[in-house]
Length: 253
Image (tube, helix red, strand yellow):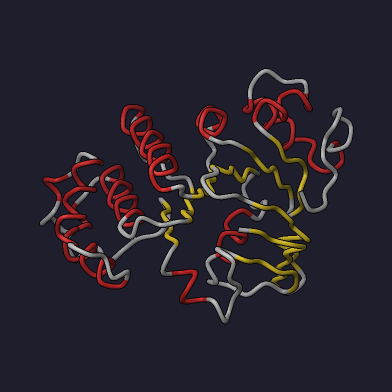
């Protein structure tokens, strides 16, 4: 997928400011920034949930609105902060999504994913009765139903214990390896992003600060961990973006 000068205004508020980046097939790409940096707004535009004010974007070679069906049938999304009907059972919810995505052998696929996320016993339980960690795993199972070519993950492990978070990261690596899935992921777990992502884009107030591999970004800022970089960026922002050696000042990669 690719964006060029992607911009979104909400009245006087500039949420995303001329953001450009490109993600290749099979790439795990991290989108990082403090709360309010524009990450969720960017994902919403890539999913056609909101319309950009200006700029362009393409996913799988298609653009909105003409390519909406061609895009959305081949992508999927999971977020800790998005819910499904809580009175419906896990089976009922996932069966509906499987139908929407025209998943073949839906029962087999649903059971396979629930096993993979170690929650097969939740199949006939109302989603509202599940723990936060179980709900997160249901949302992740939903996101993998159609074996997406592009997967958007908004803080996918935020409610998971360390063991299941580690297993979820392995699932992400596996789908990239097995299906060539491109993954756009946001997280506030910097160790997770450092170990998982091929490249990372830092944004601040909707603007691109720097992009590179985790190792390149650590070198640019002269820090030992991505958490240290995040804290530095959050506290200094764009005013300090050019002081680190080699920091990207923007533009299309």
